[in-house]
Amino acid sequence: MIYVEILGRIGNQMFSYAFARVLQEAYPRQKKEKIAFDFSNFEFGKEDKNALMHYDCSNNIVEEKRKCSIIQRILLKIYFRARSRMVIKNERDINEVEEKWKDLLSIFGIYINSFNYHKFKYKPITRNFLLLGYFESSSFFEEIDGEIRKEFRPINNETSKYASSIIDSIIEAGEGSVCVGIRRGDFESGSNVPFCSVCSVGYYERAIKLIKEKVEKPRFFFFTEEPEWVRKNICIPPNSLIIGDDKIKYWDKLYVMSKCTNFIVSNSTYVWWAQHLSTSRKIVIAPDRWRNITPEMHRAIYETDWITIEP
Image (cartoon, rainbow, N blue to C red):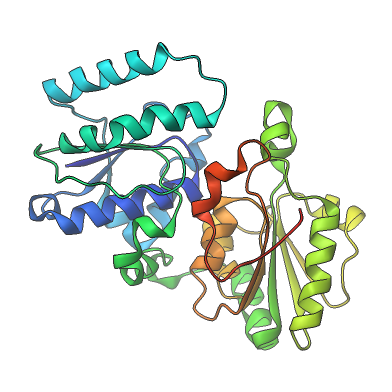
């Protein structure tokens, strides 16, 4: 069985599931088992737990605490002991340790990845696999990207009446539809601010201006958990719609966002998946850094056709 340690919410869960699916397809013995999500260290709310239950991939997922072999437990203990002996100043130090261990651990079915993309060199010899960390790059699953897109559709493509009405408006806007994904919440509070607070008001307004130069008759659809902040702080173009979280569930919202043709994304894996799942994607504008601290550690999340601007 493939066990995935789940630490983040829907966007992170989608990345982890996508890489687990690659491993499931690559090794026949894994096809007989579902992918196990281990929520032992999950620190978010109940609603965010197993967010993928609302998508077609849900029949391939079970909730189960990981089972490690004796050799896997020993290797993990040695690895984390070696890591604890280092003076960790930033993500570069963590990545340095991981890079020394990744391929060795993968031989025993342990896949560790916190930053960027890594091509694992060796085939595992163990029955059970364990995924730890984040696998935030389409490079991890590009060979089955078509299947992943299908599996991340809402079950039976059912959506709420409100979501369906937004989709109708997006379809009406056609190639002029623009999804503006604004992530604030925990990105703008507490200890996350120095690390995650990347996208300024100026970023969104510069991106809107650029879209107007490149897209004929654009119509903007703002998706955010803080609609009042958007209304007060951003110069909203006429005929725009602002969609807040109070009116739409997050699994519905992601599907609705993916119906747009053009995207202005924030540094959020949730918004990343919205643009990636779009079947009619034309223009994607993104901030030129994903995180404020050690931004080079997050370059693999960028897609090749994105337009990046100063955040």
